[in-house]
Length: 58
Length: 243
Image (cartoon, rainbow over all chains, first blue to last red; front, side):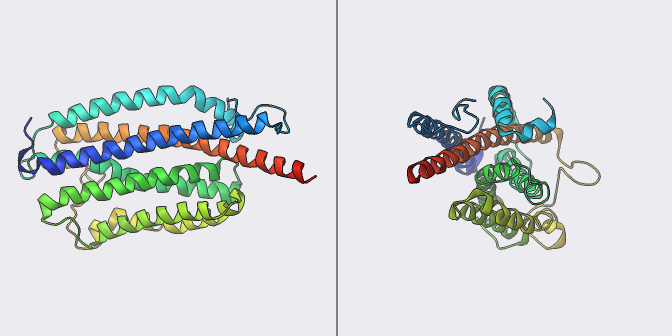
């Protein structure tokens, strides 16, 4: 597969899309872990929901 | 589980936990197929291999508008029906929509330089998409600036609906004004003007990126629900300490 004289434009486009999509995935995964940790910490300190169920459980 | 059950955040979280792995798997498989088909697609007789940029540029451009459409429906859900997940859906979608719009702009520029001889031109299509990107950033800033989610929700919903005016302007800008950007070649009266060799990889990539959006959106909505639970517990903790 030859990408011709404009290969750098094509490769940069695909690399950029891959990079941004990976950043989105990692950001959302880290955010999920952070929120679960904060919920566990709060519950460990004795704060519970009115329903009595754990907020960190899904 | 009925549709109305999804209004309950706990049931929504339970459904999301079950659906997300399947969605992520389907997205990954379709993206792999789409990338393979894009790599194997023939060169265009005029554009050469740069036509391969189309397979990532067009899905991102479609999604940049689709995500704002989803946010507009969610804004109606916030303002009219006060659906508990409507604002969560809108807020979670905004950064993802901003990322797709950014990618549409940059891949468009990288496609434009070899084809048009310029990275940027202040014409109607490019400028209206840049405005869409700035509106995404404005909405994200608004949500971050207001601490109380319910107060931010109403202002964001109104801004989202006002911003929806830009969607038909983007879509029809290539018909209403003279522009360097080519007119619609897939969603047009008379059917797509693209050859099957380009159309099929493009549609596969469009479905793959749409699934990617659904997957990321559900995951981001789950995070937002958890964030609001954290906030509610922090407020309970503060009131217990004050008492």
